[in-house]
Length: 181
Image 1: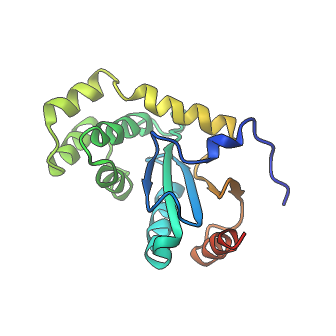
Image 2 (image 1 turned 60 degrees about the vertical axis):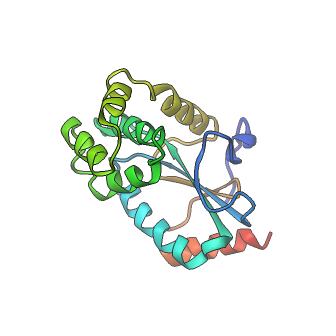
Image 3 (image 1 turned 30 degrees about the vertical axis):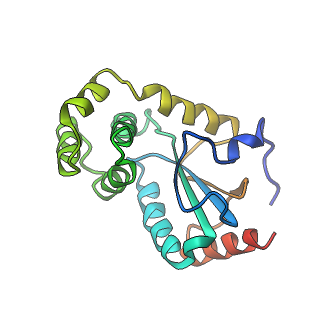
């Protein structure tokens, strides 16, 4: 399948503000542009967790925000909540909760999750209320658009867009084939 042209493929490499799991020198870098309220992203979240367990050191996973506010009204605030948690060293914990409980993303739910994670609630609330993290989320959206992202989830394996079936085995095969190149 022909790959779309990108304005700047360098955006598909790890950058300093990325949230990642694994090592940056892993043979495969898997980048997801996702939306915490998107049901397909929740499914991909489960698949990626399975793949990470199976491939371990062969994979570096990067999550980037791409909230689709026109479809998912709580997605932007959820992304900002993840970034507010990141400021307190708990991005991945909040990330997991947001996908696992994506039907419950009201302000009170987000505060409850922050409390569960032991975050400084005053700092968290201040970040959410003042949209301190909005620019960080907007940067991911802008980068995604420059890479041809139009919907979620969108995955890139070593800078190549993955457009095959959303199945664990097919995704693993695509990942392993990219690690050999």
